[in-house]
Every structure is written in structure tokens, then in C-alpha cells.
Length: 590
Image (cartoon, rainbow, N blue to C red):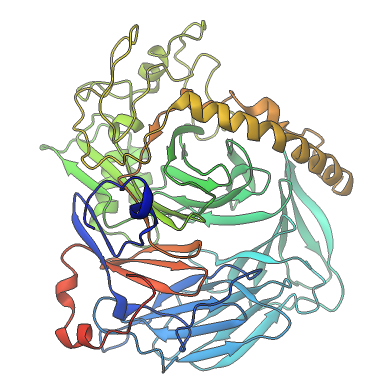
């Protein structure tokens, strides 16, 4: 049960795991901490919206300030979350709501305004409305898009704007996003819009009215549904993933496009930022997790471990590790250092501050490993480590890192190496000769060499133990299988593109042909970027997984049956009492 590698074949592969081990130790499922509907009956999820979970801490005096909200079908629950400390008491929800004619699809707490007496919770719905409720005071404050005059399509993502008590952003399956202010009304007629800014496959409009009303802004992004968005840790940038397969990163305040990336094929479904805002991970219908560099605006790695669509990606702020070497020296510019001082509005823990030191210098005094996770429709949880051999694959550890070095080590392109540098203000990308050289490092796999490889970048990197045999993958086999699917999907995507452009004349006419993006910086070929293998890849549920949240003491996952599971981090199980264990209910996961 506690083997680090995923077991192969037969009965073992179908066995649901209740614990798994990484280098930190064993993570254990706490059956007594399982949250669900009070009757604990598996929810029949056919045709239903994904189960989602939101957390907030209300800082009450008891020291048990965590609150959890989750939706299951037409129902919405709000409980005290006891985590690894005590058994969940499902008989006493603080608030429970059952909706008719529409279903909750997503929700988000305002962490700035939360107190023990009052919390502001936004809830998005399948029919397009957004509700602002207070589940402690048990009152409904406001309903936005009530008459569906703004957008009639399903709400896919809703979030408070970081640092704001009143602004929130809502994405819809129509491909539109709207900025609201809780203080303003939505009006009794459909809004009229005026173009504010437009660029490649996006347009932003302001609401044209005599008095200020919602929405303040309307964003039209890409083709098809806008599946999820995420704000950067400093709140200045917005990453969006869409059904057209594109990740688009915007400067939120300036409403300008910073950079883009294209999935290997199919739609992108989920997105998240690293704790320091340097990297973005996206997942979707290509069964891959893709790591994108915010600074260089390019794909730096892909990860294969899932056997179906990836539904959630998330960074683990608490396991991202930083090793410092003395003395600590800063060779970055004053401007770089100042940027790091201003980094992040929340969660400024020691790991983040050390990450900022790592990123404010080029003299490599700090070694960093980013930990992130993913869950998918294959019912599997994968954990991944993003290490220095992947982030900076062409340099010995003692050599100063510069973009010039990276570019000069590129080979096999026939292009002359240049010293041009890609900056954050040039999202267009790297020069033509800047493709990655072969062979590429396979993170978490054994070092390998190839003829004519030149300098190997990773032979001196310690190899992570517990390589998943299941996830071992031939790049070229994978490419051939994907190309077949890619070909089929391109026809339908092209059809959608032409229809949508007729409907949305405000967007620029320059459409990106998916067939032409493969092999470019937007979407490198499989053999052109490092391939990550998961540290662990475990089947942990009966139905598709829809939630992955990393907390300080535990990992929280949820599946479409409506069961929210708590996995104690190594060493945290000792917080439980024997009485809790004795009283633990029989869960569905064994």
C-alpha cells in the first residue's frame, strides 16, 4: 500500500488507495474526516456539474476557524472544517441550500472580509446567475445577472479580485468574462458595450450607460467556453484557459495580452500559478500537465501520468522546497529586488520569501523544487516535482544562468545563435533558433545519454526515487497517437472558429489554425520539451476527481460522487485522538 511506485497491471491498478508515500513520508486518508451530504449516499452524478470545494478561515477564538463550502448536485453545504483534528459531524451544517431550476457550479470566499460573524460567498450557477450570500448570517445579499440579460450560459469560474472587498470576476461557457462590483446593480435592460481594447483573439468592452452599472467590463476571450481563470500571486496578471486549447495570460489592470500557449490537442480545463508567479501549469483534454514559463513565455515541460482528461492542477505551497547555500548574495538589479519585496499579497510564508530570493539573483545561491499536483477523470491523483534540471537544463550548477547561455546551447536548428533576450514585455516568444536541444532530461527518471548530445545537463542531478513504472513513456509513440487525435480534432475546431468569427465581428480576423501551431513555440512537439513523470500516480476514487487543494496539514480531494476526502500529511496523523478513530464512519475509500 505504501509503495512509492504505482503498481502495474490487474487487480492492483483498480484498487483504491488509502495512503501513498513520497520522499517526505506517508500521506494517509482520514476516513473520519470525510465530508459529504449528511446521508453519505454516493451522489448519482450523471449530467451534473462538478463538485467544487472552497475554504475560508474566519479567525475565531477557538482556534478552529476553517470553514468549508461544497456543492453536490442542486445542494450547497457550509460546515466547520475540522481537518486532521476531529471527526466531521455531518449532522450539523452551518448552512444548507437546495436550489430549483439551476445548480451551483463554482464558488469563492472573500478572505479579506471574513470574520467569525460574517463571510461573503459568491456562488455561480448553471443558468448564468451569480449569488452573493452570507452562510453564517444565513442571508442572501444580492443576485447578479438575475434576468440573464448579461449572459445566459453556465458560470464556469467565479473569483474575488485579489485585494478587493467588492470586485469579482465571472467566466462563462460562452467564452465571456465579466467584472462586477457588489455595490452596483445589473440594470433592467441588456447592457450596451463600447470597445475598450482588442488584440489577437480577445476583446474587452466597457458597459455603456448613464449611471455606473454591472458589468464594469466584458472580456471576450478565444473560441468556445472559458473553462477557468486564476490570478497571479501578486494579483496583477490573469491566466485563462479555454476550450479552444489556449492558455492566455493578461495584465489584468492594463487589459493587455502578456503571452499564450496551445495545448497538445483539445481544450484546456484547469490552470494554476507557482507560489512566486514564475510558472503556470495547465491541464486538459490532452491528458497532460503543461508547465509554462511566465518570464520566457514558452512551454518548459510537459507531464504525462493521467489516462484521461486532467480536471484540476494546483501547486503545493507547503512542500515547494528551497535549499540555500551561504553566503546569500544578491546580484540582481535594485529593480528586481524591489519587485520581490512587492511580491504577493497573501501567503507570504518562508518558502515564498526564499523563492523570491531565488528569483532575484542569477548567481544560483538557492536550489528550488516546485511541487504541484493534478487530479483527473481517470480517478487518479498525481504529484509532480519541477526541479532545476528541468527549469535550467543547459547549465552546470556552477555556471551563471543567462538567457544567452540557454540560446547558445541550442542545437540542430540550423539557425545562428543570438544573444537576444525574451522579456516579460515581449510575449511573442524566443527567436527562431531557440528550440530546446536533444536529448532532453526526463525528470524523475534515470539519467540517459545519447550520441551527439553534447553536454548533458542532468547527469549530476540526484535522481528522485520511486519512479512510476506506469508513467514511463516513449516520446515518439506518444507523439504518433496524439497526432492521430490531433488531426481529427482540428477539423471540428476549425469549423467552430469560422462560425464564431462570423458571430463576433469585434474580434480580430487573425485566427490561429491548430494544425499550424504544432512544432511552434505555442505548442512544441513532444520530443522538443522535457517530459515529467509523476512522483506518485494513485487511483483514489470511484468517480472522476474534481477537487485538489493543498492545506498546511493535509491535502483535500473530492470526486463527483460528492465525497470530500482529507489526506493527512506525513507526521500529522498523530494529531488524531483514538476516540476519533474509533468513531470514524465507514467511508467509500478503503
